Each structure stands twice: as structure tokens, then as C-alpha cells.
Image (cartoon, rainbow, N blue to C red; front, top):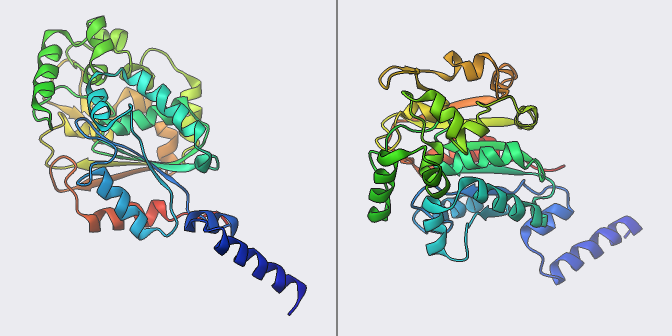
Amino acid sequence: MGVIKLQVLFVYLTLVSSKLTNSEIMSIEGKAPKPVVLWHGMGDCCCNPLSLGRIKDVIEDNVAGIYVKSLKIGSSIAKDIENGFFLNANTQVEEVCKQLNDDEQLENGYNAIGFSQGGQFLRAIAQRCPSPPMLNLITIGSQHQGVYGLPYCLYPKRWCDYARELLTYGAYLSWVQDYLVQAEYWHDPMKEDEYKAKSIFLADINNERGKNKTYIKNMLKLKNFVMVKFNNDTMVEPKETEWFGYYKPGQATEVMSLQESDLYNKDRLGLKQMDKLGKLKFLAVDGNHLHFTEDWFIENIINPYLKNYDH
């Protein structure tokens, strides 16, 4: 047996004896799939076995050796759910940026999937926290242009009712903006000037108070920006926000597409450039908010975007 073959055998036996994970072994072999980071939506948590816990299992079952990090914001599951309502979105983004930087398994890049409000939060990560590098950003039912209505809400009901009351009372009051996450992406088309001046999160990440060139540069680093819209969504108003569309200013009935908006045509966020480069992907599902099958997820998300390997 030659020297090279003996060296290969020695490395293999070392790996087996040290009981490394599949991900670690594949990484040493130069074939590891890129890690995936998940961010849940309002009223959900990192590890619910019926939602993101199941999504994590499906990804791991279909991509051998993959590392999946489902973000938890807070010290417990209960706190994670609560923070989805009452922890300033900018603070959440800062905390997640630190989590990602501290995770050595992400240092060579990762793919990101955000569900509902977790999608626009991950977009903020792409824009504000470019290290470690995000490769593909996939947002599922996310509110990129905000919402103007909270018609349906997941548990806990008392928090949903309280959120509605605060939004009705005054979404752009400074203390409401600081206190209620949903107010931070509340976009009143009848109060465009007030929204742009007082929204502490969405107006900033959408570059509506000035052109932050760093945001544009970092968005352009993405390989793909995939947006999934639910055609029968009864939770998000308007549902077109999931594709970066929104109401035309001054009314709340007629909706314009991303391509009709100033944000696109003045290229305030680099989306027009990304579109020309083929980096924007628009997917639609005939279902209500976040209602999709595992087969759909495997065919449309896992297979095209998560099976990318280092070589």
C-alpha cells in the first residue's frame, strides 16, 4: 500500500475514532453543505416541534451533514415568544449579529431562512451584519414593506389583542415604537411622511430616510434573495408586501408592485441591480400565511438553495 493511501486511511481512522459529526467529517473532506440559520415569526419560537423544530428536521433529513441554527432570542422558550412582541427589533438584530459572529460553524458563510417577521429581521442582518457572510436570503411570508393591519394573529391571544390596541392608539408614538415590535414595521400609507420620520426599524432598513450605501453594498453581496408570497394570506395586509409590494401612497386599496415603487426605480436598496443580475426570486404558494407542504419546501427551497457545498 502506498504512502498516500496509508495517510488517507490514517485520517479516516482518526475521524472515526474521534467520533466527529457528519458535518465535521464532510467539512474536513471539503464537501460540507453551507449551514442554515432560521428566524421564526411572531408568536412562535426557535424550537416548536410543529413549526421551526419540524423545519429543522426536514432540512437535516434532506441535506446530509448540514448544520442548522434556529435562533432563540432570550434565555428561554417563553422569553423567545415574548420577545417577538416586546423586544425592540434593532436590539434583536444586534443580539443575533453577536450570536452569528460567535458561532464558528458559520464563519465561512451560511444560508438564511426567515419566517414572517423573521424574514425582514434577517434582511436587516444581511444589511447591517455582513460577517459572517450571508449567501442566500430566503424570506417566507415576510413583511418587507411593512403592514397596515393585524387581522389575524397566532397565540398568545392576549398579546395579539394588546398589540392591536397599541397600533390603533398610536403606532408612531416614540414609546410604542420602542416597546412594540409590530409597530416598528407598521407602514401607514395615509401617513407616509410620519412613517418615514418615526419608524425606528423598517424605514431605516428600507433606506427611506437617506441612502445608506453600506446597506446597498451588503445586499448586492447576496447570491439570491428569495421571497415567498402566500396568495390566500389572511394574516398579512397587504399580502403583496411579501414580494416588496405595497399600497400606493395616500390610500389603502390599490397596491403597486416592487417594480412600480420609488424604492425600486430609484434603487434605494440595490434591488433593481439585483433584479437585473437575476438575484431576485419571487415564489408564490396557494395557501394562507405560512401554509405550505414539506414536499413544496423540499422542492422549492431545500433542493435549489440549501444543497450548495464547499469544494
